[in-house]
Every structure is written in structure tokens, then in C-alpha cells.
Length: 407
Image (tube, rainbow, N blue to C red; front, side, top):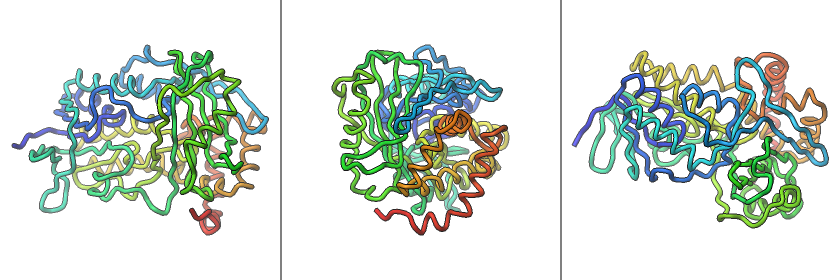
């Protein structure tokens, strides 16, 4: 059996749902295949940056069910700073915490309401034409023809391998783990990030620990680490989470985990994100900030962009998508990956983190970086600082890679 759609989306998370919402509202015929069930959980920190809030506003998704947060508390050793999200012209002055069970359900429901054909419990993979272009998707023994296939599959897997869109093995990636705990501070107005985390042996870990209040009696607690650290392959994430828990137990008044801690991989690169008949969006395109592991906002933006470009010109959409995503994010993400190699050196990491929160001015720039508020269009001190950092780290990159920790 063969069906025909304008756009076929593989994956029903935020990125895939954003594509479907945008395209279906404009009258395109869209199908979304999602291997999970409706309301399935996605392991995540659940934090939404002001950039993500803006994208959700653009998609007209009400945030009534989310817990609003007004800023970030950054901790580095004994230094602590509380900073509000900047109230600039580009993004809202607040973020949110919205557990993925509810966020993803709200987005995919909006896609269905817009007219997208959403199919749960279904695995899809690219279908190829004789000339090697992607002509649609295969679902079991059936084929769905489509003018554009959108890979919104998260961390690279089978679909990425088939498309040649795997993670670049020469670039860093991350691992993270999270659980939920009850806390009297569940409705705190700030999310908290501890930039100085150690494992059970006292080894400094390039990454951070977080407390993201959900506003429903619970807090999302988690830690993430970058692959640039020495001993990364033997890092025990459960013990790292336990070490971080000990740091925040008293200040947050937390008890036992409400569920088993779950870990996930954070892709931070992709060797390819488009080809004839297809694009990769969100995590599947490596659009994850190496400096905080966040990618929901990039997923929403890239999904909307893919839909808009297809609606404008289906033939040029894949190449134009790659070009515009590159212009918007590539320099910043490349700087982030080089920074990951830098903080893989413990001495440099300690000095850098002290600097990152040392003054209000520098801390505000760190806030913008941690909030995914920096890209090619960022004005002011943050934009200038990241451009200078990009050039400096570009010069140092060969040495940083040569001296990187091995395993």
C-alpha cells in the first residue's frame, strides 16, 4: 500500500511536532510517525529557555501547564549569583520548566488539531528512489511517498545511519542523567546550575548539575558530563548524581528519588543534516548547545524553518535549510564544541569557571550562553565576546584536540 503526503516526519518530539504544526496549519498534508505512545516520557532536564518560550509562543502553544522561571542561579564553588533572564527585544524575560510528558503531548496534540496525521507506536525509516534521493518513508511493509522527509529522531540511530547524518566522531558529545524529587522549593522562581561538579573520586567533571523546579511538588534533578574529560568512558552517572545530590540535599530539602534515574546521550554534531528529499532537525541535526546540553529551542526553531522553506519552494528547501541553519548556529556551536575540549583540561576548567561567575558583567554573558540566547544575530557584549572567543578557540583548537583526554 502506498500513500502520498507533502511532508513525512519521523519522530513526534518537539522538533517534529513543530514541523507538523507549522506545515499543517498552512494547508500541507503532513504525516508524523512516532514509535512511542501518546504522552510517552522523554528523558530530559525539562527546562525551557526564553528562546524556547518564544518559539512556543510563535506556535501558539499555551504555557499554562508549565512552571514559569525568571532567571538562573549559577553556582561555582563558593560563588553564587542569581541573575534574571535579560529583558531584551529578541526573547521573553522568562523561561519555564515543563516535564516532557506534558510538553510533548501538548505539541503533538496541536499538530493533530492542525490536521496532521499522527500515528503512534509506529517506526518509520527513509525510503530511497533509484537515484539515491529520499522519496518518502517505509512503515513496515507499506510506503508513504512524501515531497520532504524530516528526520526528528533525536540522538543518532538507524535513521541517521541510513541518511549518513551520524554524529561526527571527532567532535565531543555528552551524557546526562536525571530523576525527580519532592522539594518544598518546587515552585522556586529560578532554575539552578552548579558548574563545579565532582565524581565520587573527587575528579572535576566538565559539565554541571541542575535543579529545575517543576511547580507541581517536584524538582527535576540531574547532572551532565562531556566526553572530553579523562576517564569519561568509565564515568558512573548514577554515582555522579549521588555526589551532586549530597551537595543540594539540605538546601533543597529533598528526599529519595521518585523514580529510577535515567540517562541519555546528547549529540552535539552531525556530519550531514540534509540531502535530496530530506532534512534532519533538532538533536538529529546535532543542534545541541555543547555548553549546557540544551536543544529544545533549536529543535522548535529548526522544525518551523524546515516547514516554512518547504512551503515556499519544495525543491530548494533542503539545501536552503542547511544554509540558513548554518548561518544562524554553526559558529556558536563550533565555539561551544571547542570550549568543550578546553574544559576537558581540569586546570583550565577550574580557572574558566571562576572567571565565568567572577563579575556581574561576565556572569551575565555566561547567563546568555547558558540560556541559548547567543547566535549569529546577537548584539552587545555577549555577541562580541562569543565572536572573540570563537576566533581565539579556533587558533587554540589544534592544540586542544591534540592534548585532549583519551577515554
